[in-house]
Length: 121
Image 1 (cartoon, rainbow, N blue to C red):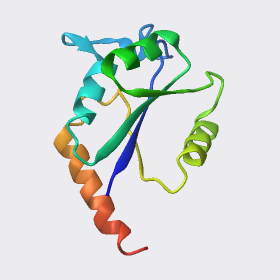
Image 2 (image 1 turned 90 degrees about the horizontal axis):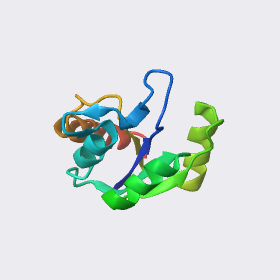
Image 3 (image 1 turned 90 degrees about the vertical axis):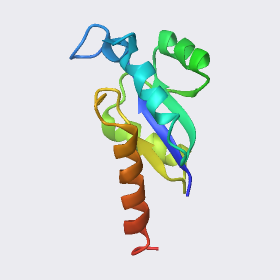
């Protein structure tokens, strides 16, 4: 089973002037999360959803795809648009603001999802 990882990202948010570009060790929260996701074998593609040109350029540098996200979209509209774009795909929303969520933990969550899904298919 393959998954598409969606990473919402903003260069500025209500928590930080640097948003998802906030420093995390020698990189940023966004760089760190993408490096973690790339280690997950079940991830088919990674998309960063952003309205910010600076983050688009980072995506190109990191060789990941991006989706233009309207900055005024509320969370419900954002999720609806992503689900519509990737109809019948398995999506994994991963946020940069949980940097301590390890690759191993994400892989365990995917395994649990796969096991639980069998009951409903």
